[in-house]
Image (cartoon, rainbow, N blue to C red):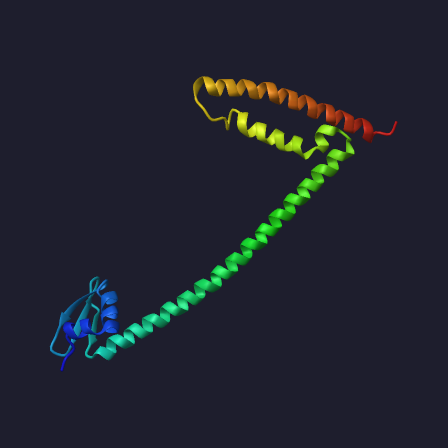
Length: 172
């Protein structure tokens, strides 16, 4: 007895396999069984028994399992790289902080030795710098003027700290 669509619909595994195949193939019933013709081309698949669809589904399942295993391995590798990068970034950040603190302590300037001063300087630059200032029209102009006032004072403090560093670095 040849394979029919009705037989396939009764079998859950064969039905699942046929459902996947229907995306790329058109199904017709022939005297010997089901004939699936590729929608883009003339490739034909002949299924004479339910076991043929079971085998096709089994092969697809094995391919999917191997893909999943490859993706899991890749995901593990990516996760390890991410953790490695995170550690490197934290180490670089700590080293930068240590270097900043060490250089600022050489000048013995209370403003530059304080990491909070550097953080405040970054914050003010982000908040009020004309390239990054939010707002439109008058608000933007006001922020720009505030930035100019604050930044000129910051530069004056930095310059004074730099002069103090140079004076302590020179033997007298």
